[in-house]
Length: 280
Image (tube, rainbow, N blue to C red):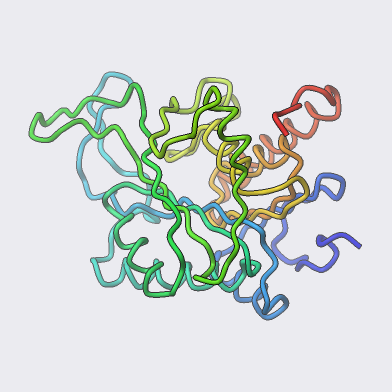
């Protein structure tokens, strides 16, 4: 019996039994509460989370060579330091419960949120394994000329707790890095035009980034969860790499975008079964 048969049917907007894919339109806290009751010992091998950064505060950035306001939506507006941290504790504590004993979680963020995330992980007793500096080779310039150009995001990799025996695909990472140990600075370009052909999410992550994360910390057939799925880059990477995926996204616009991307990836894989052969 597939794990899909035991997952809730309500609010599931897309599923593929063959690939092991589920996508929910729901508040991730509510969905996780349902899953915790059903799987008190955990169900996911890995979680990737790209939570709100709380940076939509009326500031400015450079988009397509022009000045633009930093306003990604109501979901990205800060409610103050204490409420923001309480939210991070809330969703992280649920993710921790849903991880298998040896499962790991990756969380991305800018300085607006990542220190809160790291502190929350410590409060919850998670074991921080690495902090990755994702370097963007062509970041937008800083128009105010009062700060250094923001060109990195931090991605924290953590195990469920201090007793976890996490999986790390050292050989694959070394092979990707021309036979040398991979360092914690990853230079990866922003999503290309092909990744945005069905539309784009304002904080969309490059497929190459998620592929590396999944290859590094999971095995074929493992189950991956993304509580803030956005345009479901995590799901697309999971399909390509023969992992199962459960995603949760609240906004209808991004649910429809996700479905287009997931269906296209599944079709590509069926029509070209050797297209996604990887290192493993």
